[in-house]
Amino acid sequence: MKTSEVSFPGSQGATLTGLLDLPDAGVDLRACAVFAHCFTCSKDLRVVRGVARELTKEGLAVLRFDFTGLGHSEGDFAETTFSTNAGDLEAAADWLAANYEAPKLLVGHSLGGAAVLLAAGSMPSVEAVATIGAPCDPTHVKHLLSGAEFDEEDRAEVVLAGRAFTISKAFLEDLDDHNMQRRIANLNRPLLIFHSPVDTVVGIDNAERIYNAAKHPKSFVSLHEADHLVTDAKTAAYLGHILSAWSQLYLS
Image (cartoon, rainbow, N blue to C red):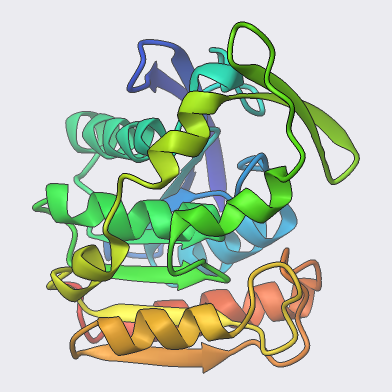
């Protein structure tokens, strides 16, 4: 895998940082993919790196990037919403189309999975979508933010996985603005759903709801005993290998 750092303007104008993973020399390029990471995570999470590594082995280029205000990207996380995340995803796809090749595959982990389900309909080049431990509805993250006390500027500090983040009241309000059941039903792309039956962050019932809302072709793969962040390297590699094999059926 050959990796290069890239940057591009996000949906709010901030410069976003990404990594473009390319197949090694001698491996024919099949297609390009964009990977959307989980809520408050980054492009460097083990499962993101592991899946990208497996996909490049089998001829897919992968753009993984940090959403506005996270990782190495610029911007104020407190000014972001689920809608701006989807906008960042579209900006990443636009950069890839202008500088390399338009993405045919979208992959999203957790809330990033919900973001790809939302954004795919606005991306004509996308031919297939995959989610990993995704909530059926972005409002699922509200339970992580319970008890948030907003100040006079409608901002509140919350602690997630031991790290402090500032969120806005607009973030919570935006979560309610999306009819994801309708979005999923109108996806009109092949969909692959990865989920662990023992996921304690986003329950397996979310995978069932996504599957039932989607139209065929749709597939489900159980991640056995994986945790929500898919921290086991072997499971991440398995996930990437299955995703690559599945995509061969649907990417032109």
